[in-house]
Length: 311
Image (cartoon, rainbow, N blue to C red; front, side, top):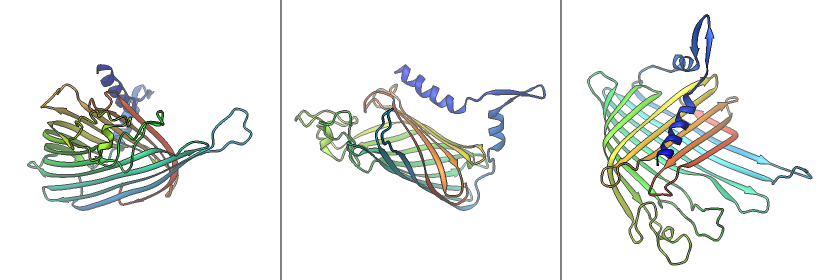
């Protein structure tokens, strides 16, 4: 378990670790440069609506190529919308993240490269005139379609829509100094894990039922009560290059609180022009109720992007 923590922490550090240079006899760090670019403006009154729609393509083609290769094409569609309202001491934030992608290879079946539904709604009430808010948050996370272990073609599907589905509701405080940084500390958090498709309890199709995502065969959900700490940090690394980081840690009070659920996601958006962009995404996830190993997903794509609102 410790090595998983170290891997996750080292991955986080890698995004922020930067080299030092000497200018005018003084040490100048890239981190100082990034801080100088950070938008420190307070959240604006009224509605802030913004969104990103992107279609990313990866493609490879070979003909008589002696080094070898397989013709392939991958297409991924993503949406990221935010609907936020600031009115006096009241702050209501909503975010919709969705993505789906497929890859097709020559002489092989079509496989998934992206599948995500992530909906979040948060309400906060400002404490005095500080950057702290008494907060309540609700999150729903699941996927669109069936998920397979493609290394085991004879095995049935391992997951499906709302199998699992995670619904998390938390109470606590949020620290929000500006539009680019948030820290959530919710010591009272309920987490429901739903399994709406009983087939995932028998992925080998042999009639032997096993637990799935911490839910026992024949049941439809499991409840956890614990503490959640999470955050988001957006920064402009260079002109037209933005990095959006999110992390979350959950500990279950009711059983094995030391077995933390860890999640980290990063999107590196490199804008070519108004409509063309390159995106790199990285996701780290650890949950004992799944496979008990650190999970990693990384994607890279070039495609069309349409943004609206202020970023």
